[in-house]
Image 1: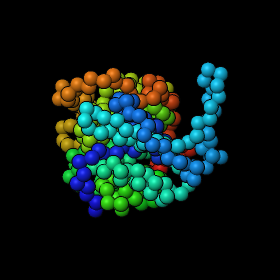
Image 2: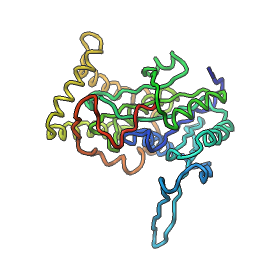
Image 3: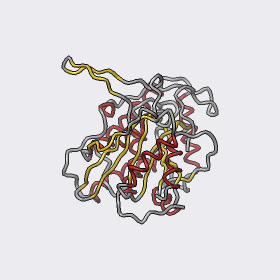
Image 4: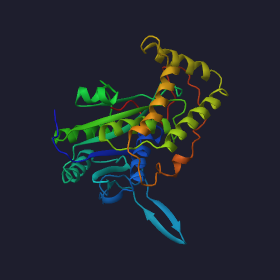
Length: 316
């Protein structure tokens, strides 16, 4: 299995689309882009990768001047003091995934990265009242333990994140996929707790300070709003309570989910004192991050039959 000895940066990748429940992975990467004021350094020529009848270009008008913005993949670069920070964003392409991955990997190789981490998010049976879990495909068991994630053994259809992780590993560079779980009754973007869960792992991996007080506040407000809206949907509070009890049953004796949530918030507060303060202005993603209200809860027909439509599936 690949093991990079490079002292270069970890490249953090987030695609919008099928693999991005709640917009969490794309928003997490854009948090990094905004926080470190990264600048676009490369845009792929995506003419061969996108089907414009499915993912159409967008017309915008600014100061009475109209422009067309085409779907593309952007590589962002900047510095945290003397440490390079590199991110990649874009919509998941529709066509020629292997060629697309080869194109990206060629760009990555010029940066001599320590590794590539590809983020994703999926709908799952998880309660919004607990810290949202993260699983992943990690090449190092010690690293998985350090990041607090469970290795998955999923078999089935996959999206581009899984393909890119595999292709990067084949090229000789370390790579991992990290997946946040988003409650299936509150999966509409934005989902700040899922963004928070992903950024905590990327922080641990890269050493960058990524979690802001604003994101923590957004996460808490999101939880409160979903809790309030859940009371207005018949059967949903009981469903959430069942998931809480099921999740709590897997915790060590004497530790409940409520205690875990309190300890998690305490951990977040204490982290601020442990890290060097960031002298740059802090922002947290695009404008949608400031809109804290999720779509109203949607009652499931059963735990085994979550809502269809925008469900990205358990793509690992």
